[in-house]
Length: 423
Image (cartoon, rainbow, N blue to C red; front, top):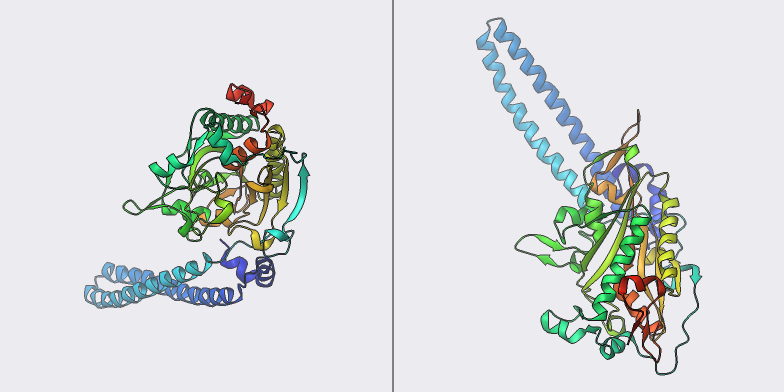
């Protein structure tokens, strides 16, 4: 969330950066600055009244000490009037603050100046390509047919138990899932991340803290009776572990990783993009999160992108890295890289990870700060990335590695799967 001070002090710069998203914040900024002026005026009036109340209390105390109880009682009636006025001003102040907040949460993060201009994925900047595209024989099968042929995933059984978008993995399909989760977690531990196993449910404060609420409310599963949500990504739980904390500078960086089941309603999704594993309501994902000193966050974003690239190299998957244009970025991000793997049978690129720097956007919502010696407390920068989301990784592994003998397992995974081919 942007701060009022940033909006007031850097109005034109922020308006320009938000234009990269094709988001016109002019009216929002105007109203916020106007409301903040009213807030400051109300605060000044309230402070003055409270000071008068304190002074009056001292004077009444002195009158009692001097034995002038009658005059003291008369002066007491003045305190009731001041208290009533201060209550009215306090209520007015709170309403103004809520009005400001209700506008701030509607404004997305201001993109970094390096974000490409554009309105959709076609305008994203491809910054890296790696690996050779698979040369599959004619008649190669898409992953949903391979999953049926080798009895790896049952989409119909999942629909019977729950509904479409909730597949059942079985046999070597289930073992491949478990292998990938363990592989991704082990690699993260080797890279210095601390593993967590967080709850699946999140409360509204957690969703608000990382920016899923109110922006993604319609895409989340709500448990109405308990006012809790099924987590859409472990980014929410991990980042909220430090909500409201004042960290010491020597605690930074904080590097966290978690495997979690993720849930998204994917309202409005249809067509070929939802076939098979392409788009699910429930899926497995290993997430990496960092809480960083602001001076380091953009170097770390590049390091995180290289780290995820390394995972894809080990899985022997062809991939490309795209720097997202302003119109294709998520609400909370200042700069995002998408990792896309090539799906051989579908002959298209599938997004498997987004690595983002949120700068102070989440930290402001979370009230997550750090303090260096003899310096004022400052907001941290937060970053996260999928490392990796499993469904489309599995889709690409099945499609790209199919042979007449079966589906070959990449060498890096064999120790985890316990088998080198699905046949």
